[in-house]
Image 1 (cartoon, rainbow, N blue to C red):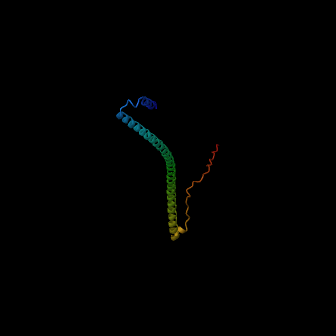
Image 2: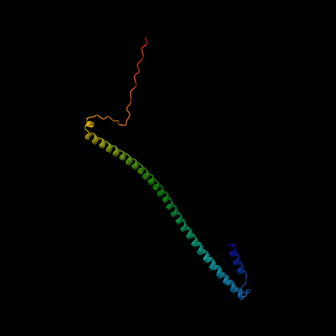
Length: 146
């Protein structure tokens, strides 16, 4: 700004009579170039401000999208874990049911054999339920002393 003012003062001090026509033409061309460069600088400055505003908008949108992506990734991880637990529970239930089917099949086979065999059909069968029964305390007899 200061340089521009100094140049204007100097230009006013120079008398147009003392300057040759070629120099005067050169001065006019330089002034025209300076005006054009100022106009271009202002235009570029406005474009820069617009680009910075647009960048800020893109940056805000990017942050929002990244935040949404993190949220979705957390939800996906939770769903994967839930599905894994559900599969494991299903596998355990399947194995349990297969065991029950095998037990029932074996029981049916034994019952058919008992029914078909006359001697076995008259017998009593004892089994265990798999649960342990509580046993009472043993009574200890005291020895009598004579």
